[in-house]
Amino acid sequence: MHEWQWQRWEGLPYLTCSLLRDWQHGFFTQHFWSRTPEELVDVFSPSTAVYRLKQVHGNRVLMPSEIPQTEGELASGDGMMTEEPDQSVWVASADCTPVLIADRATGRVAAIHAGWRGTAQQIVPTAIARFLQFGTQKSDLCIALGPAIAGEVYQVSTEVAIEVGQIILPSEPSRSPDGTLAALEQLPHPPILPDPHPDRVRLDVRRVNALQIEQLGISAEQVALAPHCTYQQPDNFFSYRRTQEKKVQWSGIISNP
Image (cartoon, rainbow, N blue to C red; front, side):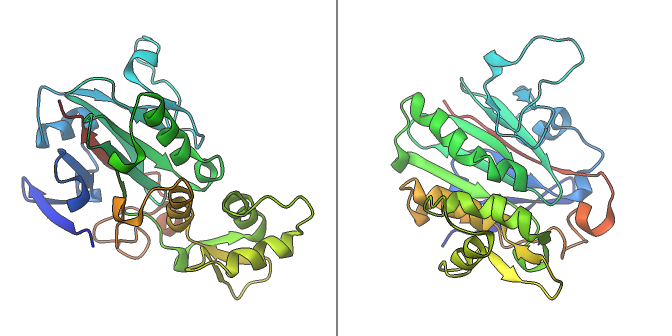
C-alpha cells in the first residue's frame, strides 16, 4: 500500500506520495493559492524550468518542444510531459483529478489534468501512449492520482455518467443507456453510486481513471489513489463544486536524469 504523506514548506502543508519518492513532486493545498508554479518550484529546485498549459478539459498532452513560443500566452492542453532532465510540469485542479506519472527507467514524468470530460476522452491513456512511443515499458510506470472530489459526493446527470463510464465497458452498440448504467453498477468497486434524485447518480472519476489504467495492463501496485476529497476537506482544498469559486491548487513533478 502506498503512503500519502503531509510535508511542510514555510509552514504550509502539501502532499507527497511514496510511489513517487524518487522524484521531487508535490500535490499542493489551498494554502499555496497565491503562488504560481514558477514560485512553487522553489520548494524543490529553484533553477528548474517550469511548464504548464491553459487547461481546457480535453485530452491534449504536449512536450516542451511542442509549445508555440507565443509571448504571454499559454498553449492549450491538459497534460505536460518532459523531454529532458530537470524539467518541471504542472497542472491546476479543484475537483478534477491531478495525475502525476513517472517512468522509473528514464526519469521522464508527466502531469495530467483529468476532469470528467478529459477522462471521457481518455487523457490518462493518451499520456501513457506517449510514454510508450518514447520507449517506456508499462512495468516501469508509477502513477499517482491526487486529491479530487470523491464519488460519494459528486452528483452528475446520468448522461454524464454514461459518457464517462462507457469507455471502460466492452463495446456493445446495442446497449441502452439503462444497460450502460447497470453494467457500470456491476463492476467490482463500481465507479457510479445511486443518488436520491431522478436522472442523477454519483460518479467516481478517479475510479474510472484507475480502471482505464488497469485495462491497459498496468498493475495495481503501480497506481496510488489519494485518500483525500477536495469537496469534504475544506481546510486544505478548494472545491468548485462546494463554493463555485474559481480557485485551484497546483500539482507538479520534476524529471530525473
